[in-house]
Length: 258
Image 1 (spheres, one colour):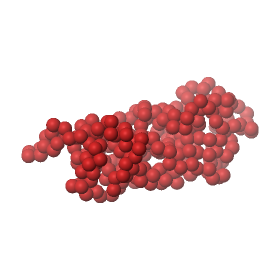
Image 2: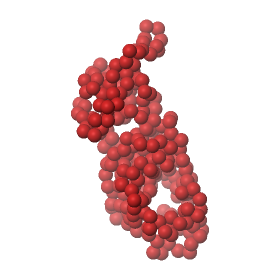
Image 3: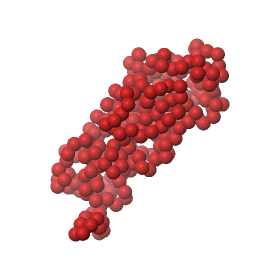
Image 4: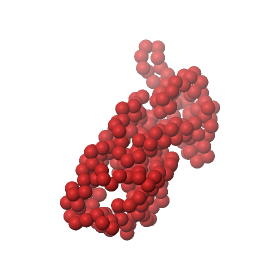
């Protein structure tokens, strides 16, 4: 939503186009050069930060709604997306945090009474991973700010989003052992040291530099290229790329990396 007219129509008539009381919240992790970050937004007239998200169109699948929300915030389409948990505690959204007067003035209505948005809402959590250097962050008429935060220096989040981030991070790290994650976070050609650094950063743990990449090669996910990268005197490591066919198969069927 980019205009006041679109926002007002969403407030008044959104229930005709979106499923009431069920929303999507997305933990979007960004990796670049051994840094792991999280994308957060700050809504207008609300002081705190939270995860980006939104409602599900009546014509959408859940994953389509999640992908739309991620693309609207990052400008990147078709990222690795995984559903990780559903959140439905009765007090998870505290409406007293909204500046009711400012929002009423912004929308141009007299009261929130009976509005479809002001009721208990269940949220379906998804996480995504991208290279944050490749994103173009987007705000809209409801959003004051949109920014990347270091994963180890997050502010206190609104609602139950601290719990969401903790669960998303845990699930992502478990999934690293069962899905090939990395296609969107490395250049097309990369060294074994670069993919090793990616996994160490995402997992926040040390991995054996001699054994870990060999496991990916043994699974057939990496192809050794007849090219090297010159990074200094007597240092020219081989370049590798993902085997796209085996990568896509592993996304569908899973793998065991331990």
